[in-house]
Image (tube, rainbow over all chains, first blue to last red; front, side):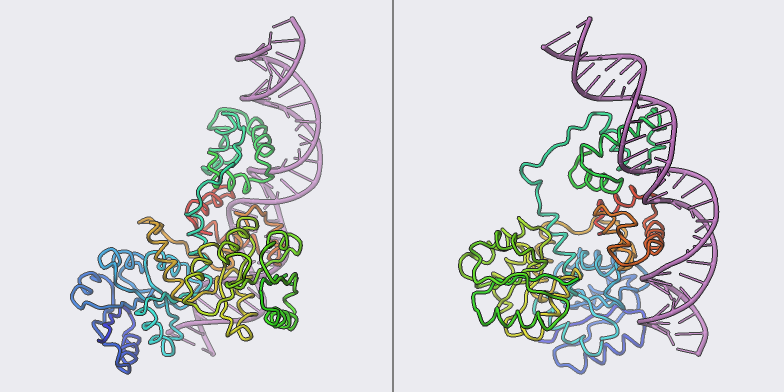
Length: 214
Length: 214
DNA sequence: CACACAATCCCCAAATTCGGGGATTGTGTG
DNA sequence: CACACAATCCCCGAATTTGGGGATTGTGTG
């Protein structure tokens, strides 16, 4: 049984190249070939592919949004993202949105067929760096607040100052907002630094957020 | 600065082989070499490695349990699992327990150094099938990026700078750590501020954490 | 080959933060 | 009433950040 492939790629020459690569292998057949994702749900409904190859740069709609919409409509459909570089932030976002893997445009000829087979066997081809970030996210989501976490003896006013800071205010705007002097804000901050054992704005904000202090 | 490597491998010949491979590369030095994991916490405390290479079959204690215990004690320590086959269920469990990647025993000679470097650069070498399962688990945990969230086109270097910042570093210490000039850090920060649409350290740190940018 | 972009680094000057010290006043408690 | 603490505010001076501008070099793409 041949795997049905749909292509969403703006560049006609690339679409044709992919078509040729698929034709050369008995495992695949071209289900559809589209120059934009404006009607991707309708197009996919019509051609019923098993795997979609999508260019991350495709115009008409944001690639990431397209991945989200397609996966919402067709949860079992595999999407292989075409990208120029592994460092593209949208690649990570596409993976999170549900793409099964990616392929570098520069390596289309050598790796397309293998990646498609990989996906059809249940694999998710991706770079170690993307994999790392996915693992890290999973780890952070799995971590309940550790037992025995210390709570900090911040006073009510200190907590208010810290909250303003985390919300993007600086000392000047905090003093205006809380109707206290700039020096008062500084005094509170000194106390907060001492209690939280930090020594800079970035440390105190990060700690406040990670440990749900405000 | 050489990366310190500790080995937990029952087979003395394999320990020696790994030792030789590490010696042949200037990037690594052997921190410790152990035949069991009975005292892995004590051993790691003593030799202070940056990366641990551990055999999944190692006797003395279950490999997965060892990974869990080590990661609980040394959260930032990287663990590279040695396995005979990628299909071993314990491999997937080890990855979930916190291992950063794995290496096939049959490919030790050709891939060990590359995998160690990969890990030290922040990657997580793993097979497409393991990656797929991790993604699937992530999806099941309902971790998918919330609808409407924009992704930011930060470059790799910008991301590294931002990560250091979130981890409490200032411009000065970031420049030291990344071996670039203070002004380069500033340039990256200007770009980051622009892309994330913020105007202060507190804003950028808060945004980075809340939106899982680093 | 021309172009665009990333990464790197430099300069000026103002604004803000940090570490250190000090003070007064109000409030609650024993 | 004495005491401890929170909240408030002041000062000095150094260090860091911010906003603005500029530059060169290397790399990838069409």
